[in-house]
Length: 459
Image (cartoon, rainbow, N blue to C red; front, side, top):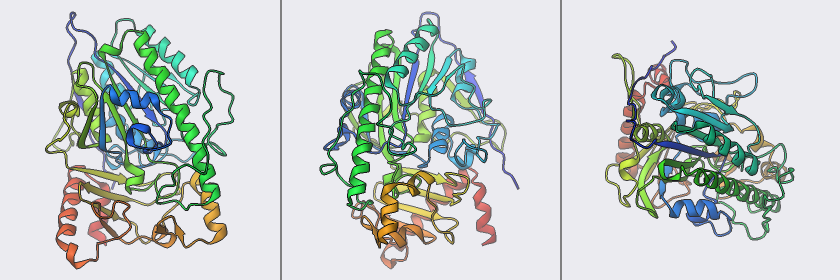
């Protein structure tokens, strides 16, 4: 049985003639983890992101609700987890996934409220009727100068009309080979090189020469991303729109290496989020556990557009606006987030659900009888091919067997085991916590009408 979800009715609040327009600039990086200076990375060259953090709010506990490109972007633009909005997997290639046509994404909600909507470079979700941007400018997602020029033109063409602009960078995603650092970029784009011997190696990767070489390439791509962010923010300032524009910067998922991207481990979903609200206190490090499902409600709140559920069976947006906590360091009532995954590529079926609190993570592997699948770019990486060639028993600190073959339930004490290596699901001393986490996840799955709940009745 196919479960069809909500059509969202919108009460569009028109801006008074005297009110300044409230614009939105949403910046999405592609496969960026915490390789950012303001998040403590010792070698990253990210002065523009660091400056954005100093000028706004840096969330220390922000989480994507899925670690895969299209599903994560759909979550950002609809405010719904993947199993609720229907963007189960990637939106490209012949065999693909798409958001339920009954859902309305941000451009569909903001357009009727008088906003001009645009996307530059990577969008990676479909169909058009769910995401009806007025202006779509594809390609060039790694060219910072071109993106900035397109941003300048889009803002100028808006005139006095309020706008919602999504800039989807392609960096630091993998290219066919490497990270596109050998591409032809304008002379003004810096090519910052990194010494493979000095880059930090994450816990989930083996410390091998090919891994360090790939990480050095990755950091160069991150530096180019940062340069692009700086140029776009300069374009906004030059257009004299910075004082009435909410700026949000996030990444869709963690770094493009096994153990992070496509997983629900923290390396895949615990990510940077920077928000700059005009007039708000600057330099705030907010500890609220925020989800990417909170981004759409935040944008709608800022723009004065209120979504409302329709009918008895329609579910409301599960997230909430982040605007009330932007100036807080300690945030009460923001102590858990949820995650949902089905596919990356269409061949990668592995449904998972998770709940993460400040102290624990619980992952339910719904199809745990299957081996954990690899995204094609991760499988072809020098890192993973090296593991296969050497027949390494471990992939960093996690065994290869534990990564590939997983139990039905995983429970981790994040406080004492931040790398999520010791599964406590079968530990008698953790039975109470396990039951609590099971109950939290079950309640959320029911609230969001998870169609995979039917498996519980038959297994």
